[in-house]
Length: 530
Image: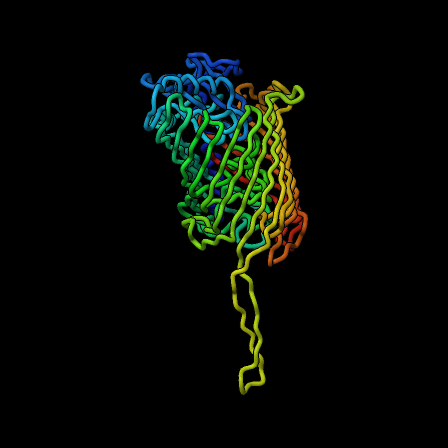
């Protein structure tokens, strides 16, 4: 098993060396240009590592990665960065495409009209390539991007994300001190109809996930349980192998995208608690507490609804309801109970410029919830004719009291042209209904292009380095925590390897792992290919 562990790191290291060598023989792309207020006809719109829009001249992008002539750049839309306003040049391009639709259409090519913040959460674009890669293009990039362009002309937009992760840990409580696994995440939006100009539209929203271990330990063990921590070192890891379906729902927009509703099997994490700098275990922070709040009960795999309203460009509100307690990988009516539910709210203010620092988003997230569990009752009795008592323990369903909580999710660019971005998540809630932490505070700082800024590698404009810190207090647990205050520090670097792929080394230090009485700290190193 240790031989596999070493070979896994060797494989990724060899891949990086081969890709670097390939870079020497491939043509270097021209430099990306900062975004201006309007989109030019010969420009490709791409998103940078910290959500900034980057305009790239079409002649600086390999020709086989551009939209084919039958589609054209007027329909090229970058994948939105969650948790921020859709940039004005992208809005302009979307509006021009929508205006070409003069009547109702089935499977429309143009994305529905949506307000700027809702558009970043409810759509996926049709462009996966990213700017300033180490290697300008790889053979499989062409096919992957061409398929996305073609399918978007029939209303299908998706984001296929895959990872190979190898990790090693110290001071484990149980199991192996190394794990390796593969994951897949496939959210999609299939637009079924749209009225003239995209003012009203309906589409099918879905999300498919898959996970498998690359050895027996990766199949059956969890980094969180092996370490005995409250936070999960790898947020994308799942204890359920195989295929899962967190969301399958109908989505409807009205009033030019000011109002959007979702109903069906809803993954509330697709809509709530978004953050531009820390919201994905693929290309951002890997620890679960830096991806989503562990206080906020973000239900998935269950029935529910979500209502989003953005009356003004800088303000929005959301309300989400979920019911049921289906586990991952099961149908939503598995173990269904009306007494297991959550009601979430989010009010956000998203100004374009805060005190001269640039764009920021400030969110308040109240919630109430109730959960259903099993209570153990022990009965003692003495059988007739015996002098010895006998005990019998029975499990019976029980409902927790309704409990509430309050969370905050903040992000701020640190200067109009700054390469730095700050974020923070803070919250507290009822111990029985929160998502693992009764109270939690997490914050971090990201920097775009650190090697370029230091003058060490001028072409690394879109790489990003980040550092984050989390303090957590565990929710109620029948096992009882060994420590009531867990601390975690994470530092990582994201290298834009190709237009589609990123290599991500990551180091985490955990102090007082909540459920590991035998360790005062633990180290976790991960190498992830996204």
